Image 1 (tube, rainbow, N blue to C red):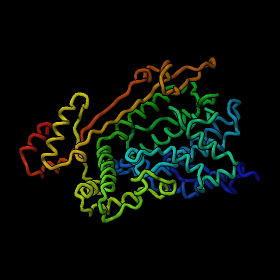
Image 2: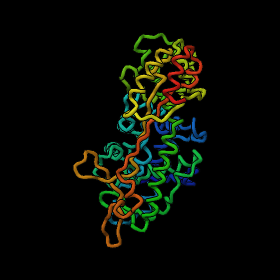
Image 3: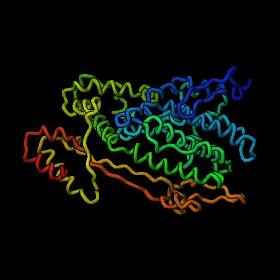
Image 4: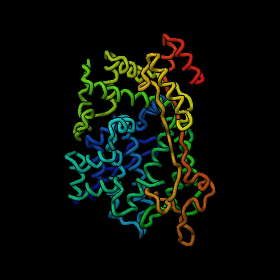
Length: 431
């Protein structure tokens, strides 16, 4: 039997708190889940440091990837099946791309990427195209099949409808992580009527569109996303943990470059520090490995690295105040000088962190980055961009919200010996 069409002798299911069950009938999908590269995702948290704010947020990229696959499976097997605009030959490709879309995420993904200037999407493509178990499975479907999967994830595949299923302003990726993250953090913001959205979704040449009758469900989805970003993803306590995590990695790299003699050598970090990361090196990294080093580095002679690692492990995070860099840059300069004079290194202990989100936008001719809008399918067959019909969406379209915080170690200020500097710092921080 053709491997691409081969089915399991009995359907496999994963019990899932969001979708109830994740169904697997295709042998290709089952084999991909069993690869070591996919199993690695069990050891990468979906929400990075958020578990230090919302204690239930311990779920993994593995959970999420299965969820995205399940949504796309439902779309291609139920919602789009039999419709003339949908090419059923793209079914397996769509499901594989959905399952593997996050394959290249590293430990504490986004913080890790920023420090070492990595791109998880490039690593995802490298895993799919490289000497890996995932590539072996995909190549059994066809010699060019891994390339097609990589192109869908890179958003360069010729069939834009397939791309839109996992990468657009209303895609399976977002629909899963909003609900999954809401469930595990215990908040109510991320819930929306996905069943309704799937029911009114229709395939078109360039993207999936939504029947006009489903507009209110889409409004709810967009507002859920907006609330999740500001109440969960950009939570200031989570950002405090990310700041400390980032500074640990910066400090370790700095010490390595200064030929510091580590008690516990950062063997897994050498290729990162030297900016020569191979795929094999990258795949050995997960959050258990990173946390092992943080545990060990609490005993280092370097006081900054040891202190930052203790803070992260024991959740002794930085405090924060609202801060506007454009208006308060002079205050930041004064604070930096005072921190240094008080014996507290401002490079590691005085940090401005910014978060920004654009809840919904549409393509404007002449702009560099084309944003594929959400289109509504009208009764007469015409397509209308969502914000033209929805007053709620129109009110937030194109409006970027940005938030800045200044993070500092309140406990170190309390322990600092020179009270004159501390009094001036306290005044500037308005403590």
